Length: 434
Image (cartoon, one colour):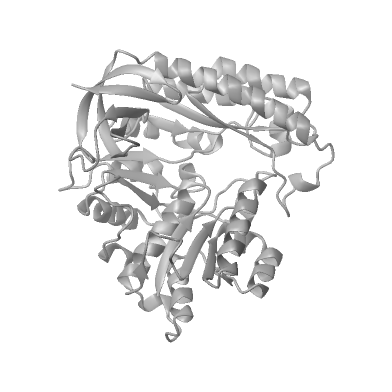
């Protein structure tokens, strides 16, 4: 039995997919990168956006229609029991557990093996995985927690994962150390909200302590870097001082993904985000003051129920004032079972689409201006993967994407190189090796 793994949605979903593949290989299950030829395809799913969900369902049914087996894991089975039951009736295997071992148990059942006990599977950190190939790319995704402490009215992921469950600090460090020993050079710490890591554990360790521990692994390559995943504004505010100091460490990207979602306090209240627009502005200003040059990513939802034109203009005004380096813009997607799905005042799809277009256009302008301001600077860039054609892709210490000349089989992947930032094109910088 050869098994292919696919992932959709957030970084955490990709991390769980890689973990499951790694554990499957350690348990003796053959895997392949070629999903078109694999008898079994494992799909780690996402339920945040309806369009992504529809794409995944089409993909799962297409694979199943060829007589191959599909194993569905991740958010969808946990969040949408009725849909999961429908898929099971169609012959798709649904894994409603959250651990990578649950996927391996399901795979062993498919090939006729005796039912596996997750407790006796080999430890995750003791087996080398085949994805991603460190000769081609360098990122290692390390999930640090599942669940969150938020109460967002539109979020189905919160319903899927429930209460916060943080991985112990030493377990995270050990997994990161294992990836680094295998040749990976970028450790991405990920969760639904990394800012709340540790609040459910005994002791006083919080995210800044975890970041410092991962950034100071002994006997690890000097060139590795640590990226901190998404931080909700209220959770970032509680760890801002310590996390700002951690971001100044030479191995930590000066990067923060802090979603705002709306510039209207009225809409933020309906979203149950737990902060006001002005509080968000002050938070970003404090972060930028403490971490010079920090890259700020944010998210914006357009067309939330009852959003007026005035509400939307407040969002555009906030973007102009804060000037985030990157803004991910999405139209509101009503998810079944959430409070927002049953709210009155639905915004017409055509209006939501037009607002999304306008916000995305502004986001593009701000992104380009942010990149253009760095042209002619010199920077140390971690080469993270092979690009298209004869190019290399990398990230500077601010996590800005940099495209450089290179070629297939380049020995520079995984190395830190000195680069002159020669230009800005689209959403990336163009670099010249010095």
